[in-house]
Length: 154
Image (cartoon, rainbow, N blue to C red):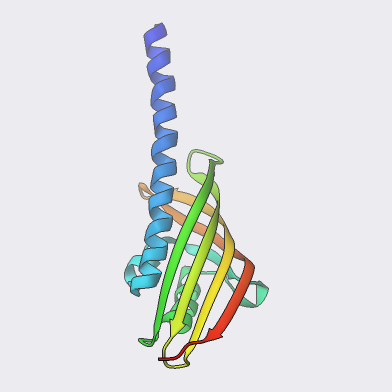
């Protein structure tokens, strides 16, 4: 009987590690899809009623569809290139199907049409939900630490 208890405990600990790794992969996919303008892949990262707040309450959206429209309008032009780098994930499971995470993010964007470069450091505060066998973003919020813009010659 002791072996069964130890196996159950070990299986639970492994499940936690697998869930955390799946959430890390989800966030990596989110940033990669932004940079590659893979809108279908990006939309797949969210639950339908996701909430996104990007830099303040003026950029707050209450559905995956609204988030996707804002992202496409913001970085979707062919003249815009972005690089998202996420670091230092702090992920905590808050239930069997819920989790929270904090990430540091470095962002670089070039708009060749506007001759503009933007560099930003921020924190992401996320909530995740496990549905249909996979983790999705339930809410995401960016908290900028610094934003720097510069004229970029072509």
